[in-house]
Image (cartoon, rainbow, N blue to C red; front, side, top):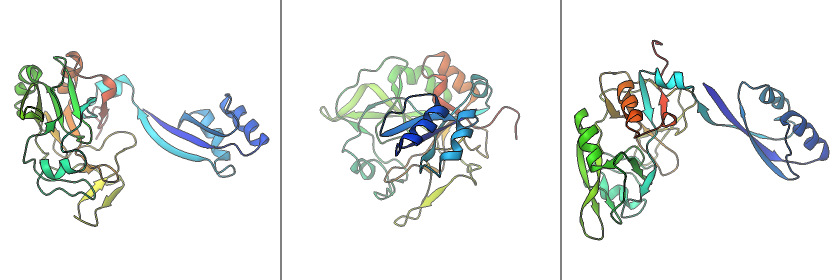
Length: 267
């Protein structure tokens, strides 16, 4: 596992430029610069000495996992597929149209009450696993892929309505993911509490391994918890090692779309 940090700032002087370029071994230009470094790298340890003096920004932008860490993880978080369409009515009103007890301020919501609506019929490949803009935490797929894969996992589906014809799509369905019966082990993750609805939302970017669920007796599910920032909130999708490997084998997903919850045999 490698934590990636982004260092950025404004070049204020010739000496500042020279010092930073010597550390980073790259041309930083004459105004603003941004560079990504591994947290354990020598270059990052060296530039730490100048963060305060030069007023640089230092932030975590992500984590890179090895193939071994991903393929040996017992439970993983699936980051979702590419977005293929926008839900209608467009954001943020799709929330109140689609879910019960939705909050337009933080983006949290309750049980789904109606089918998602999209503008036009999509053209998805057989093995496509995709998402909708703004509706993170939901899975959509080609209807034949549902029958051949997700249905065998015991999952139901909902139709997706094409707005123009006001009829169910012939090519895409929504996979209905069950909500977890238990909470995540998530005490160390930052969160906010909505002043309007009172629900808790965790930061969308977890550093390192994703929090482990208390209950591990499932194949694929949504977390009880919400993640997001601003007016956006979504559940996270968790699945087992077997499901992950089948998705990769079937070309439904790539290894980089999975974040391990823990290393194998680590408690």
